[in-house]
Length: 312
DNA sequence: CCAACAATAT
DNA sequence: CATATTGTTG
Image (cartoon, rainbow, N blue to C red; front, side, top):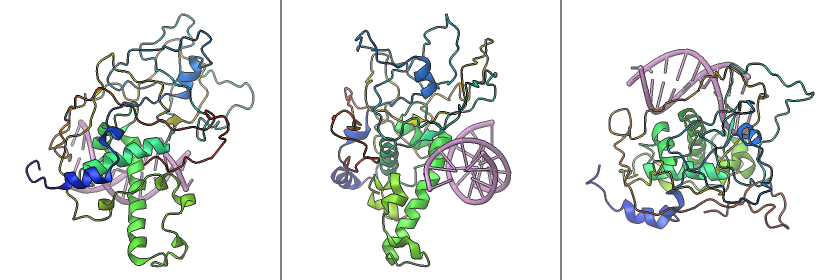
């Protein structure tokens, strides 16, 4: 797959905004619990420079902070950015009600629901696009996305939905809105229905199986770089929903880690159903992408429930 | 055994 | 409906 490369590159360049858009970043998923636990209030100390060393490797953000007074600051403190109260944020799921804080040993703790924000989805689509549908399998996508905290399951689930979306689109585009049976499908891309999907253009090649040179080009894959590489403060990567109450952290400090050790990346390679993926390192210094959420920042801007598609 | 996928559950 | 979880298969 390396030599048969053709001009996909040209097309690629044409179509995509810029590799830089998806290249560098390891977005950090912060969990609300974590954020709250850390008290994300406005840092009175103007210590804006919260530069933290970004540990590489995906360390799961464990919800549930040890309420231990002398609890350590946590090595994996996630830098948290000023989240814009944009639309999706940790919309309260509504638990609460009374201060019935379950101090239960939150054994059986579960991970909060991942919310696929347009940015995240964007990355997802870009990753898939660049991988080619063939190689776009959950694990690979996940790795390419380099989103901290993202699990294979997350991606798999999203991918499943995405494939359905693509399928639907194919049908529509081929047969027209009036398409087969799906009377209601009248719209090609009903923002209301597709919401998220509508925010990112579906690369043409997605629609057909045979004509897409996937090849493995150099992937922008940015394995967690060195400790000094941190680009915090960017828009939020993804947000989680609040779920169970935390608080009652186990004094024992024993909770199971859903994903403790991950097979250090770099596992891509032929075999495992994965295509030969090369993670080519580019000497890029460090780009920042994302950034949007102008909602409150502008002052005038308000709400706008959905993000404008004006990203790509 | 792990990963992808499909189906099902929340 | 959007994700998560589970079951099955390769």
